[in-house]
Length: 37
Image 1: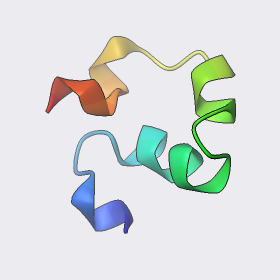
Image 2: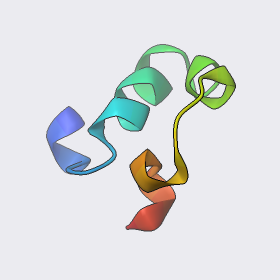
Image 3: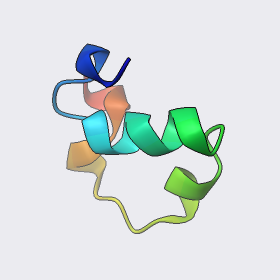
């Protein structure tokens, strides 16, 4: 699950748990976003 997201594991984790809602509200830098891949 989280293994699929190497650099953006933090974002993906919240995305899986909060359905991509909470992680969007969190002050997560663009460098951590899964979009980078």
